[in-house]
Structure formats: structure tokens, C-alpha cells
Length: 313
Image (cartoon, rainbow, N blue to C red; front, side, top):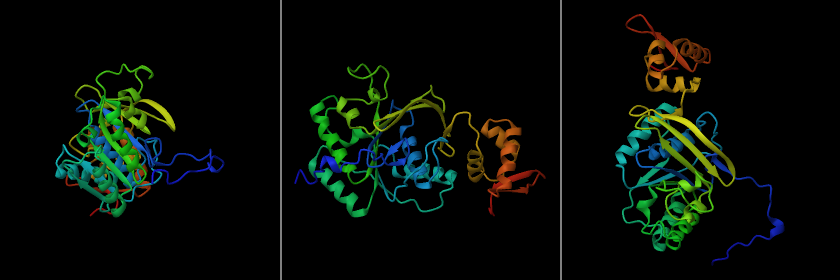
């Protein structure tokens, strides 16, 4: 039945606010996009947001986790499943998440969102297994439509909205080669989504990731229908180590604690060099963490004070 639930106008609460998995970044029950050019580490941002949501850690010192997912279904095609776990294990270790992550990973070759039979199977799986958060990476691998054809892409976006009735979606998509679209502000985040305008129309929130050259430095912009837009958050990706994202230039107790958790046995001098910060600032934060019993210290083999996670053996 197409018209299952009609809500009388008088019964609609106009004050009801949008709900969030991560406030301002991932809308609960929404179709949330991460977009960017190739090789901008979009998939690592997708993984980090999932890891942060599950661990309850505030993202980039400002976006709080409001409702952690219960079960996550990850649909990927391009990366190996072992690589997916290896990099996420690094993130979980750095974030201090010690539980068995409730994540299922699948490479559904041949699955297409614009195939009505396929989307019915996916929705049935989500409902049966209790997945309330689904990631799709990348979108292009999960449909057979012409991205520039509004009629064809509408079948894809309708499928995304059907799925979003049962689970929050986080979708990775490439950015547009040209952003000259009528009706959208020059340089807007919405215009960054590649393909027909029906894709941007389907988005609850879009995050655009830009890599600065070939460095670990990136810029993040975001815009959504029910949240404030934000321009140019400067981020760094800890490549080949924790694979976590952090604000460029910011040194917080959480950042130092997470680094010690992932790299026990370092001195304050070691920490200062690796974090690229003044030793005096690192010492101040380390003392604060010691006072709060979040880390512990012990004398190392060279009679230097080394720091460890609290109660670490």
C-alpha cells in the first residue's frame, strides 16, 4: 500500500527537531553524504565517523555523539575487507573503544539500488538483523543509472529514502567535475555532489572533503537542510598510524591521551616531537592527565619518565 500513513496537519508538531547520530554531521534517519575528489580520503572519514559514533567520542572537538548506532552495516566494493578492519582497529584503539564493534561488512557484487528487487532484499536484511546504520561506499558502485539523468537517478534516491526509513545512511560519493549548476550558489557544498541535482536534493546533509596537495592536511565543509552550514574546518589525517582525524593545530588532553593509548612508553619529549607541539604544552597536558588518573608514568630503561594508559601492564 502506497499511502500507509497520512498525518493530519493539526497533529504535526512544528517544533520537533531533527535527531542526530552525531549532532551537526550525521542526521539520524537521514541520507548523509561525504563527497570529494578521488584520493581525498573520503573512506577514512566515513570510517572515523562510524568509529567515533560507536565510541561516543566528540568529533573535531565540537560535534557531539547524540545517539550511537546499535548495529552498523558497511557496504563496500573497492577496498579489501581485511583493510577495512585493519584501519578501523587502529581508530578504535586510538579512541579507546575496547568492545567488539557491532559492525557487519559486505561486498555485495551486483547489488543495485535502482533494482526494486535488490532494495527489497536489503531492507529485509536491515530489518531482520537490526541494522540501524548503513554505510555505502562508493555510491557509483551500487547503481546502474546515468548519474546525469534526473529520471534514472531518481530511482536511486527513492531507494535511499526507502532504506532511510529503517536506518541512518552515510553515503560516499565523488564530487562534481564542474560546479556550474543553475539555482545553486557559486561554490556551495550542495553543488559539490557529482551528477543530477536530484542527488543533492535527496541529501539531508553533505560533507565536502578537500585534500591540500598530497599532504595529510584537508579542509571540510558541510551543509544540511536542518543544520548550520560550516566552511573550511582544517583537519589532519594521521596516515599509516591511527588513521584518525583531528583538528589542525589543536592539542587537547583527549588527543594526548589517545596518542599515549596507541603509543605507550613515550616520554614528554617523544610526544612533543611526534605531535609537533612545544614540550612545555605537552608537559602541562600530561600533568593534567596524571592528576585525573587517565594515564600513568613509570621509569624507563634510560631512567626517563615514560607514560602509559592508566592501569596498563
